[in-house]
Amino acid sequence: MWLLLPFVILPIVEIALFIQVGGVIGVLPTIALVLASAVAGAAVMRHQGARAALDVQRAMQEFRDPGRPMAHGALVMIAGLLMVVPGLFTSALGLLLLIPAVRSLILRQMASRVQVSGSGFSYRQGYGAEGDFGADPAGFRRGPGWRDEGVIDGEYSVQDDPPGPVREGLTDQGDGTGEQSTRRGNSGWTRH
Image 1 (cartoon, helix red, strand yellow):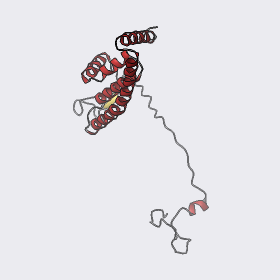
Image 2 (cartoon, rainbow, N blue to C red; image 1 turned 45 degrees about the vertical axis):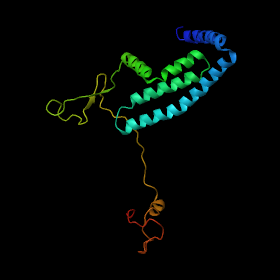
Image 3 (cartoon, rainbow, N blue to C red; image 1 turned 180 degrees about the horizontal axis):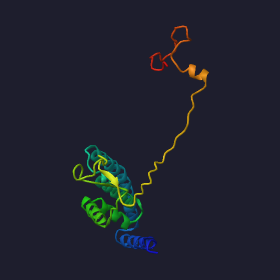
Image 4 (tube, rainbow, N blue to C red; image 1 turned 30 degrees about the horizontal axis):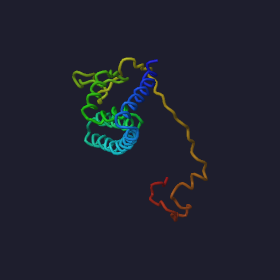
């Protein structure tokens, strides 16, 4: 029910804004404003999206966490999408998201609500005298909930040696008269 509420309220807000703004500046300038917003949104998505991708790439090259540039890039893309959607309210929200301080505020609010849960492995700081002898040198150990049944899953297939005539054609050796083969690959690596 709550998920459908924005889809009901948003069109009503957009229609009310169209009526109010159209009454103040006129119908044609209002339509031109919406079209200009859509063109600007497409340009933002094109240029700022490429810039966000470069920021993520630069962060990875400098061994920094790419999460922040990636989140800012996602918000910029959402801003461009909101500007492309026909409507004055969504265009205003898109313009607000283009301001870096607003994006940082939104990301801080989102980060304060995120709860990170552990996976199957945990990192142990102590190693050596404090740690277990013979432990994994990378410092990983099985976390809670890990079941060690002593079984390693894997796949294999049995491949028999090829029949004699095929096996003979695979070497670089000659025909048995001491003469080497004239085909490529006489490196000696395949002699048996």
